[in-house]
Amino acid sequence: MRPWRHSIAVLLLVSTATLAQSSLPPARYANTQLEDPRQEAEAKALMETLRCLVCQGQSIADSDADLAGDMRSLVRQRIKAGERPEAIRAWLIERYGEWVSYSPPLEPLTWPLWAAPVVLLLAGLWLARGRFRLKRR
Image (cartoon, rainbow, N blue to C red; front, side, top):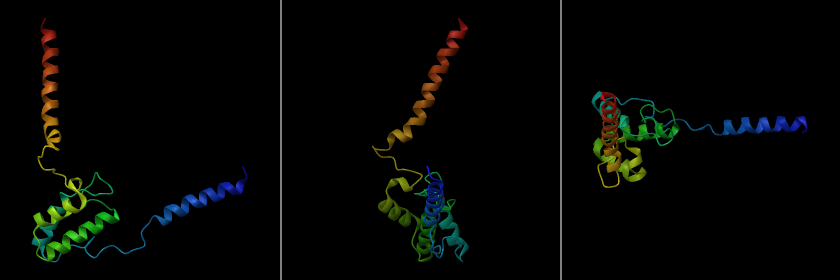
C-alpha cells in the first residue's frame, strides 16, 4: 500500500470528527439558570427526571450533549413562561415517547419492569433457602 493512502485515511478520520462538532451556539438557557430561584428549582427538579436521548444513561441536567442543552433550555423557557412541570413532562413524553422519562407509568406494557426486581428477589431467596436446607443435613 502506498504511504500517501495512510495520510488520506488519517485526514478523513480527523475531518469527520471535526465535522461532527456543532458550530451553532448553545440555546439561551442551556447552561444559564433562570433569574427566579423558585422557577430554577422547579426546572432543575424536572430536568433530573428526564433522560438524555443521546447519552441515555444521564439526565438532561447532567448531560453535555447538544440535544440535552436544547431540552434544558426548552424546560427553562416553558417554566419561565408559567407552564407547570407536569405539563412540560407530558408534552415531552408525547413528543419523544415514554423513553424520555426515568419513571415509566405502571401500564400493562411496563408491568414487567416494575415486577422484575420483586421476582428476582424472591427467586434469590428461594435459591438461598435451598442452599441452607442442604447444609443442615
